[in-house]
Image (cartoon, rainbow, N blue to C red; front, side, top):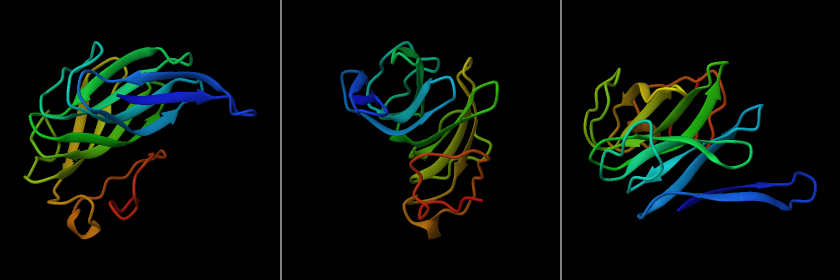
Length: 171
């Protein structure tokens, strides 16, 4: 399972910790916290867990999850299709708590603004806190870890965690 924990800012003492995942492999790759103390996470899972807004698609799916300030799971949702999909970066913006997730996928899923082209395509997806996947952009790339292979620029107006600048040209 993936996990997250909250540490006391002054002493570093553990306030709470929680595990996220199901019966398979689950990884947390990105985290952000908004002003009210809610925690938003992204990563990858190869089995269903929680009561997701968007169901598990098979293979390994990316996920986004919201934890209350207490660490309790508020909601989770899966992003992906039948292949390997992972979320690596996450950001939250606006009063409506729109969540932006970036990652990669090696299968078609959702109704992307830019179609999946094969191999491992990078993606950016916008999720609304009350709805499943709202929109996604698939970025054509046979290998999203090489900057020369990413031919689509994704721009965020808020900080996105866990994005290697060698992977994307952020503007």
